[in-house]
Length: 458
Image (tube, rainbow, N blue to C red):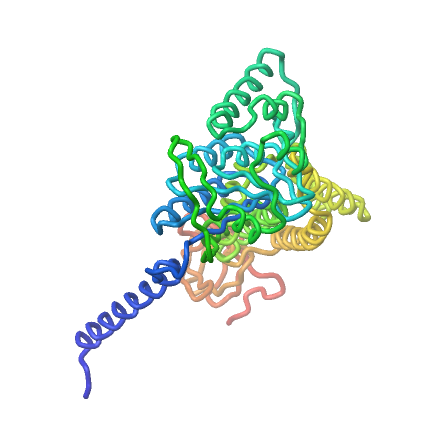
């Protein structure tokens, strides 16, 4: 059976719609696999993780996880934490959601050797249940004010305001949680840190457990007091533990704010845009470069970026371009490589972890960038020496044939590039002679007899 074009179009649209619907269903099921399980064999414990520095992406993750636990009527949210600290705004956001959570929240500093320092100390003490594994530590929660990735000095009045605000914020929930606010404040005022045993003896935490399984066993049947004053008995016998992982969007955003990935995006963006500007019409480098640069700017908004690092990278790029233009016997090239590597190492510097772009990534990205940028610059410089082949400029110097005799100081007709042009010349030129174009004046060309051809007919 032969289908008309209209029938075929309607047939294709129906199948495309059906396919899109099936794909949407599959994606929705894939994004929310846990919702298909309406009944649980035991009490649901939702596992979450705080690993690394605390920022906006992690705060969104905690907010969505607690909301999901409430919808699924979980018995407990268990947040395993290992963090050096993070941004104060994100920390306050997380604490607020923990305090407002309708589901009890347990924060557990683990595994052995982990820490819940600085901002992590606030999160630990805000939980319904605060627990630590042996050989872990917490505290050291004095606020740090940093600009460009470096701690800066502040005047005494501003320092007192920041410290008093942090102390008041800590007291606002430690007292209601039944913990030791006086000892907790020393982590802010004196930057004091505590081992798991010290925190337990000082009534900063509730439990010390070797593993999450042991922690859940100790919590089973335990009565806790929620932040609103209500008492809840935890029923955690034979719990069903399910992990709440970062969504694809959160995982992607968390990935691009890593210093190594940020540096790579920055360089790829610069290289792609430079390629498009110097070689218009390639399209792909411009698209990739624009997307990479926008992502790098997003990461720059969240990361403690050092201005000196950015300037060193710009100096490195400038030296690579100059190396392609001038003969320096490699001096500019070496200087550019050193400048860009140093810029990468200085680019991101966190006062919490001293983390930044790794040396391996800095070298692995700089060397190919130096080579590619020099090649592109040399191609641009070489193209400037090429003779123009199109347009009015492309006519100059071209040979043509006279099809209508040109009188001295008068006009005639010539054929150049298979086109007829009105022509003038300083001397008479007979029909059929070969001429050379001297210049173009509007719709008329000025010609002269071509050398070594005289009045030779064509």
